[in-house]
Image 1 (cartoon, one colour):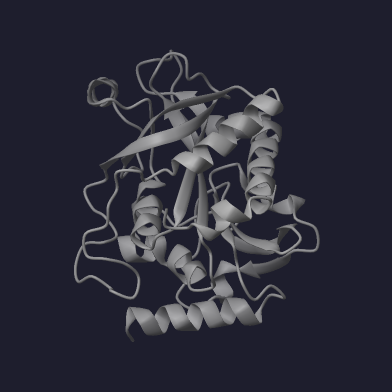
Image 2 (image 1 turned 135 degrees about the vertical axis):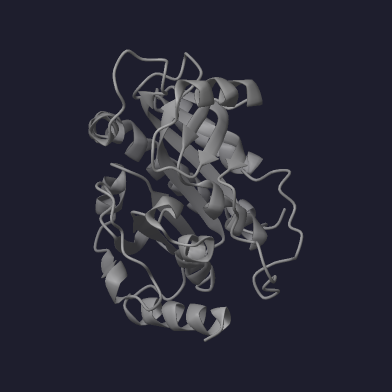
Length: 286
């Protein structure tokens, strides 16, 4: 079965499983950040395991559900409570398949979130970081191989992978709500092990401010499909060699829990602002 056929099956299943026949934005919720989806009133919930060609989430903090509801009247969004990671053994096409399927339902915007390790000293646990740009250090990418012209061009531009208009909105919402929102470059690595202190020194030299094991494939795929993208990292730990404590996923989950209210306020406010700006919503490829 071709990719086009697989995407058609998946998108048709999702469309039939929700009252919302068109999606305006996709929100990918990282480790410990899935509770934002629970704020959507009267949302439809679809288990990943039921959707054709979707994988299953195996990581703690990733519920493995698609939650679809309106953040504002006439502005339905799809929240991915958990993602598929490259380190789980999925190929890059499987990692970005859900995003591609939701794009078929009309999604123009991607808000992607993650839990990340802070490299720069000011990025302490609990900080929220607006992603300005990224480094793809995963050793692979979702566009490798034959191009699928129905999704996007062979050589997509990545000079503004994280949309400047969306970043301005997020900064404004943060300021209005008294949320400190820092900014930096995210390095995506394959994982699943945490980095060594030497690798963190290398990443700092390369210009990375934070590091994680996700996000980059989704952002590449979104830009390939002409979606406007915003990325936010919740800094859940200091990277290896910068803290006297050993790194653990439990620490990631606990820190994300402490930051969740600020995170929900920021994401919710950004989406509401986006829903209220039809000009931006209509200029998807600007």
